[in-house]
Image 1 (cartoon, rainbow, N blue to C red):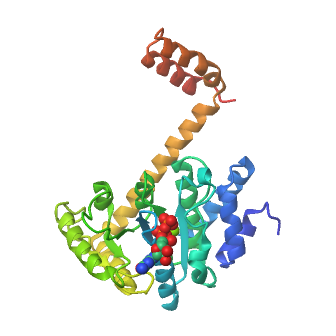
Image 2: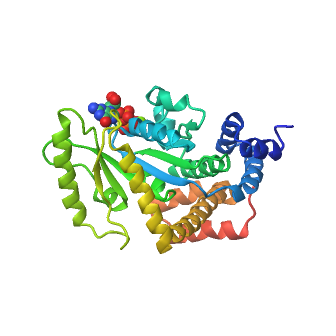
Image 3: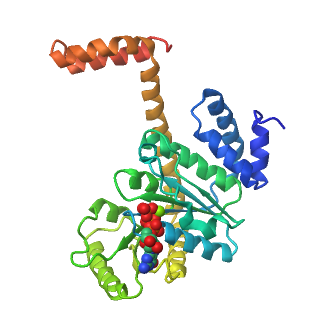
Length: 330
Ligand SMILES: Nc1nc2c(ncn2[C@@H]2O[C@H](COP(=O)(O)OP(=O)(O)OP(=O)(O)O)[C@@H](O)[C@H]2O)c(=O)[nH]1
Ligand SMILES: [Mg+2]
């Protein structure tokens, strides 16, 4: 079958062919217009086969042990008969040349498993662009029969919010640092968390991890929970020694059960779909603005005039937006 034929990809993905799955994601990540048209067709055909996985987001500061924990959790899940796919969101990967999952040595065992699929962050551009590609990659993995999706992101900047908006359960990995545990952790991240895990609770560090756990529990009491059906628990774990992994998974399933019963699960997925639509609209509008020929011609002059103060910013914006409505693109 031709590789320009959407059926080649659709069939391969549905047959759980990991090589074709990887190719499909590469196509989605491509910015070539013909690739985008092709991937849109593929996505449409795959959509009925998506949505049935447990979607888990994981964040934490660099070095907290995210990759180690994902590997341990992934191995645990595979042993239970699950198929686990791991994706990463790292908008900085274009600049740094690396990405959260580029260092695959840290997931050596998991990546060798037939029931696992690991994909580094798409490099390239804005957080919005990376998020779109990751979201679509997640759907493709679901269509390929992966029933647990893990999305990893580094806990710096805006990417946590983005990942939280595409998963069912958001896990924040912390480590005890000695002294004031709450330093450096943004309140906003605690508010997004469905659970906290104090990792590296092993050896001499076990006692400090238990203390940190109490401090975070106290801190969480000060935040009113997002749902009446769930108070985010604080757990300790050792990703390295595979301690606490089963407890993390039980917590994810407990949350899922409760949210399915209360209707919040479905509501959450619906809200996420609508907010994804709006994110795409915003991205599309900006793209159209950027490509509109009249706008491209007028923008430098108007920018200059705004700088000089010879035209008001409002008037300049009005004029440019007028071209978006009234002058055809390209
Ligand atoms: N003692 C101990 N060390 C751990 C544990 N988990 C991870 N580590 C170590 O901590 C270091 C960082 O672990 P990673 O899993 O790479 O951390 P990460 O959060 O993925 O880091 P980035 O991808 O760089 O953000 C490695 O040297 C791990 O071996 C643990 O449970 N206990
Ligand atoms: Mg990592």
